[in-house]
Image 1 (spheres, rainbow, N blue to C red):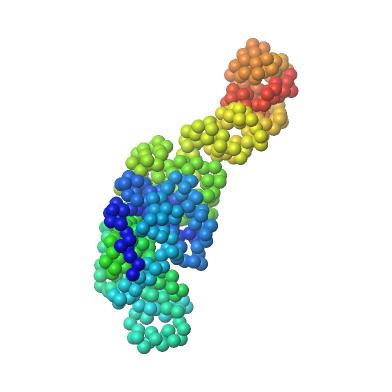
Image 2: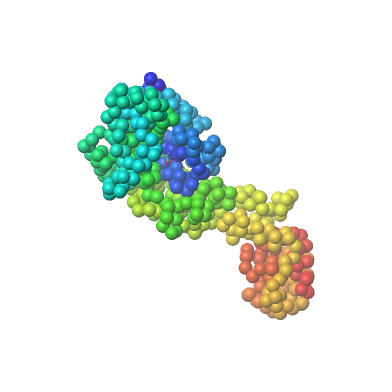
Length: 477
Ligand code: GLU
């Protein structure tokens, strides 16, 4: 039998949390939050954070989704202690590579009489479910194959029907556990139909491999989506039958879109990749997700060690969390503000004109960064600063004309004489025109940028290419 014994006592007793995604799609915000919470729980308790890829369903698994998951987790900074690329004695960490373990555990269950082959076809099962619903009963496996005799089974096999393997749920039991989020839970075993633990194609099914893997990887606490709450009693039954250790489970409320429906593609960007490609910062996403369904009195932008310190399963809400991109943008703004100039330049790199000198890039970044949430917000300012004199709308042109040629002659002269020093330009125009406040800076802003609003004028003047301020101002002299 493949040995759970290769599990070293020391590593095992340290305890672990895990993130166990099924790679059947891109990592979305809900997965990312589950990964974050488990990571934080492990870090704050000095436990291991395990990454296990649940890829037994070959038809739904794609290798690019696995690559994507790993890349997203790394981008978020949620490095795993054990998992793909960090194998150890408790691995392998992709379920598709754990067949030998499953075969052994399934054989053990067969020896115990805890499982039986089921020959029901998909069509028969559907008909049975329909009949139960029509009779007002919740659909569950009717037990058709539970007590087949050995000759009956042999006959089915001889007919070439591929059997699934079902777990024989003991009757008349009450299954209890205390959920880390929802508190005491109780289920009647009679309400749980016998469930499939090996598919007809021979692959191990979720209830079984998820549970035995947690046990054999030393996972002591599991935070996962609330949609798995009703699966837990089944998994407890499997673990009890095999005499395996049981982790503590916490089921985290689902994330809903603004319309109250479970968050999905129709609510816009939901995959971590999309947020990354739009220029969201990992710190912003982490801080937002930390507060999505988890209350915290700390409202500062926190790094992962501080988030781990502040995380508390007692603060996980029981009701659904509502996704709100505006809130995410607030965190994004905070994250962008704390970037160094060099980081901001890297963040905007794709938008900057090709071959731009480092000093020019720095001046541009210094001018526009305070107004940015996403890199795309800088695109119009790239055009305004580097794309030649802006055209003016007629009302704006009126404002400029009212200021008069003398105003702009003084401005252009001062720009030329001072290498576009903002204070020198302001002082010269103030003296020449007697204007102040908006009367002073609005005509300047319009002549220079073509916009009434935008980044501060001083840094913008410094960001304009050499001689450009004078050229733009002289147009109206
Ligand atoms: N592979 C399962 C999922 O992605 C894992 C559930 C669990 O965390 O136990 O939903």
